[in-house]
Structure formats: structure tokens, C-alpha cells
Length: 150
Image 1 (cartoon, helix red, strand yellow):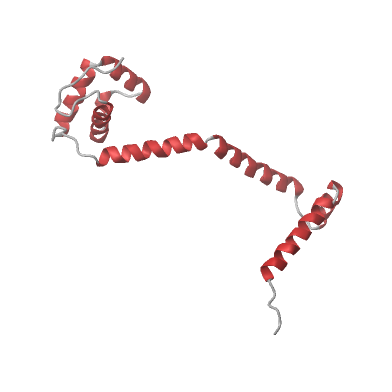
Image 2 (spheres, helix red, strand yellow):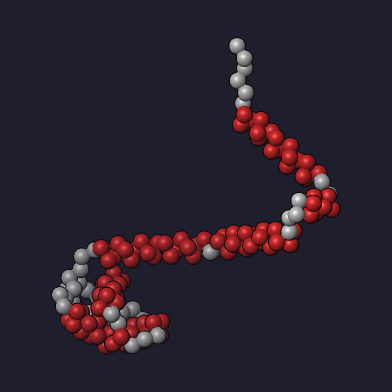
């Protein structure tokens, strides 16, 4: 009975031998071989630099990316949760206005951060802000406003 060939092992050995032969080549030999094959060395170097640049950026931003994912998960959970908000958009807008009037420091911070007037907020934004204030404990579910932390 003949022995079966391990093609994966043979391929792995061949690739290791090729890699070893390239490692043993001088820089001049590598450049000469690349030029013989018609490869644009400058273009290849730029592509490698671009790959490293993207990898480095992703590595540096990994915590930011994870924090963004966690924020989006929390926001998704919040919007799926049921709240005792007024039924109409006008009543919700009035509730937000009352809350912000009672807590001007909150409104000032949001206006600065959002760069827009609260009169320009969509109905969805108004509802989102109310839900966030409830989650933060600044606005109670029964509709009574509490003072926001300073």
C-alpha cells in the first residue's frame, strides 16, 4: 500500500523555503528581481505604507471604536425601552422646554454641543433627549423635573 502524500505539508515546506531564500537575498538582489519582473517598486512601497497606515490608525482607534459600539448599543436599548412620555409631539416638546428652562446649564451645554436652536429639533430628537434625561436621572418618569447635577 502506498503512503498518501501530505500536500499541505509539502506546500508549507515550499513556502518556507521560498521565504528563507528571499530573506537571504541582499536588498540589491530583491530590487533587481522586482525590476526584472516589471514590478513598480515605488508603487509597491506606497501600497505597503498605506496598509501599515490603516493598520496603525485602526490600532490607535480601537478603544474609540469600542466605545462608539457600546454607545450605539446603549442608545438602541434606550430607544426600545418604554417610557411614560406625553403622547403628542407638542406635549413632549413642551416638557423638554420646561425641563431646559428649569435647568438652563443643561440647555446651554446642549446648544453649544449641537450648534442649533431647540426649536429646530425634530420630534425624534426631542423624544431622544427626553429619554436620555430620564436615563440620566435628571427627569423623572412621572413628569416631575429634578434639578440637573451641576
